[in-house]
Image (cartoon, rainbow, N blue to C red):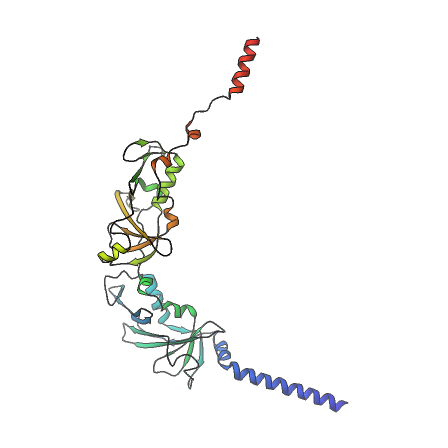
Length: 354
């Protein structure tokens, strides 16, 4: 009986060992990643600052250069590069901190998708250092990507966000323009021209800071509902662009965006105040609206810019379609208060009785 128990225990131990060995053979690469991921590994540690970044995406090669303290697009120095996006890519590369060292040498590049890299990221620094980062397959267990430096043996993993940063298209790198109006309180007049309709709302402020509103079209001037006028001014002041569409459109492109003959024009007059001196300046900002894009937003262009952006349709809902008649108080709001007829009747009856 004792010998049988011993045999059973030895058999169980052998099975456990076999299973452990098999698991190690099947998941060795992933275990290697997990074992070194806590501390991270410096795959590229240049002494200089990144000055050139080149990478590939579906639209071709993107090449960025750092010149005169500004990131520029190599093929067109006038292109408005989003400086925050470019700087974030530079920070990923100097130093390039991998999440783990997978293998020091002898890697099967096919297994890691590095025989045919999905991206090549070329880096140069102002100290003359260079390297090319090859991006391979994504690890389905961790979500991370395999990389190696061209000409070197080690294979590493990097975060998913690292890989995603170097897939931006030119449009994704373009700096989105801003609607320049500083605040709702700074607006003195807003005018919407849409088709045959023109609506202007003027804002006046007395010495105590109390505001009053007048609204007009091409035929008459009225006193609008205060809440409606305030909502119109607020919407006109707080517009924001969703994304960039085209920084240097041709005449044909402007026509395709519906901006050769805008569907609507919004003009906002406002006062800019210098924070330091308190000096004030009257400013007029003009926005042209065109066609609707596939996402339901509007193509738009500032009068003092050639760039085409998209403007959030929800933000425009408080502006587009507004008319003078739609801004006037209803009859119930404008009618003076009066005593109910039943009360006046009962008073008269009581007086007659007396």
